[in-house]
Image 1: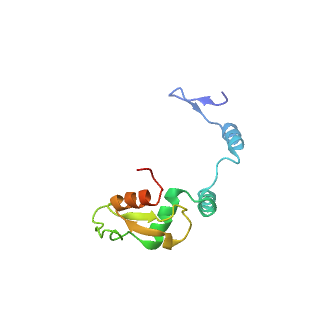
Image 2: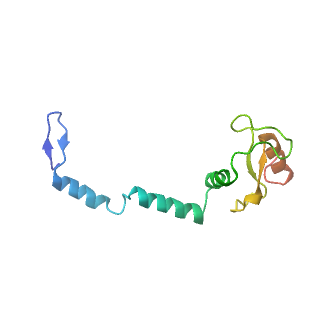
Image 3: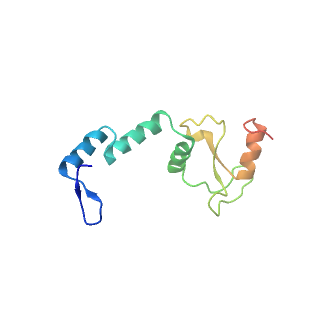
Length: 115
């Protein structure tokens, strides 16, 4: 190993060693700004299930009550944004506030889950 052995027995990296590591990692390590740009491209071109729900919550806010039974969203997770047609398009009208019970019933009635 190229380096100088320190008091603890661990090799200290020389400038040459650091340069070689940098060359080996070139193209793999991206700046924070580049990583943010890459993630935004990924979100806009092919958003994941979670990314879409984050986007909906950002634009619609936290749901206040279930649009079907009227249950209030007093605690986290009692009411959430549900996608009506399971296509997960960037259309805010496709998302409605539902409690888990009504969401499950909706999905079963519309053939999105098995009974």
